[in-house]
Amino acid sequence: MFRLIKGLGRVTKFTRGANLIEHLAIAANSEIDSDKFFIQLLGLKKIREKIISADLMEKFFGLEKEHKFVSYGSDTMTFEVFISADDTKAKDLYTHSCLLIENRDEFVNRALSLGFTTIKVPRDDSSGYFLFIKDSFQNLYEIKEKE
Image (cartoon, rainbow, N blue to C red; front, side):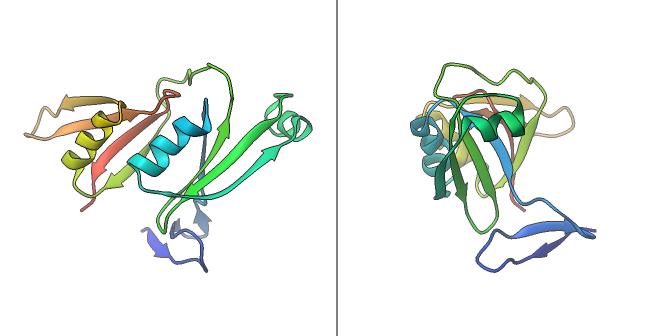
């Protein structure tokens, strides 16, 4: 059984027992790309940004290169984005985050107007469809209608 916990000025957290998801971390090629996805498409606010030293990046991720870090959030979700400042792309084909969105069809239209790749696959057992969106880094997001 999952329940909502309202933090003090923090993101609402979903919990099962004592386990919480505090944020999801991903990468992007530029802050402009990141702002386009998280602010323009998802409507999140930029919460924090800072530079993570090459030393810390090496200790955390085995990558000895300084990275800019940007945090985006709302009352219901937080994303931490590491800006790669290069032209690499996500290589994992399966890992994705699932977002619950109000008015999914309107969201798809907005995503397409902003130039994001959408993947719509009809469901076998109904008139609905599966929906995935890729950001400019090729991170994958499943989009479901909020009930």
